[in-house]
Length: 181
Image 1: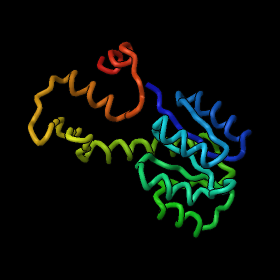
Image 2 (image 1 turned 180 degrees about the horizontal axis):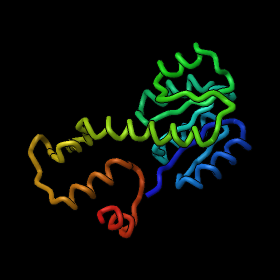
Image 3 (image 1 turned 90 degrees about the horizontal axis):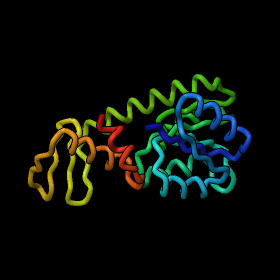
Image 4 (image 1 turned 180 degrees about the vertical axis):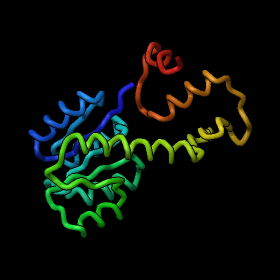
């Protein structure tokens, strides 16, 4: 299953170039040239990572980052033509996972995407997550429903993990079976 990346950048040419380049590495991309559209896509499509430009119309990338962090822990890589140290510090303090000044080598961006996704996967796997009365500890492969242990087979746990790690995404039967193999 491919990783979905949301690109929020007002430069539509860059969005298109990034989407084409990232597709060559197996990533599925969504893009928005306005921050409000990007936030709507984030809410409804649940991407695995966000590439966020700092200089955006109406709401700068720092404000968008702060807004995302109110409701989501999705990994964020900030891009900007402003490469000053203070901008990097502010971006990282607001919750960005990485910061890459423009111009950049596309291959470096891909390496940073892989790095950020690896870190996010380790962090998310290490902590139990709650889904209403359901609690899943991915590291220990334990499930509790209303504080009661639930015994699951390996395939049942894998299917539950797949569905809970990508909320809002609809899977076909074939996609689920492929993940379980």
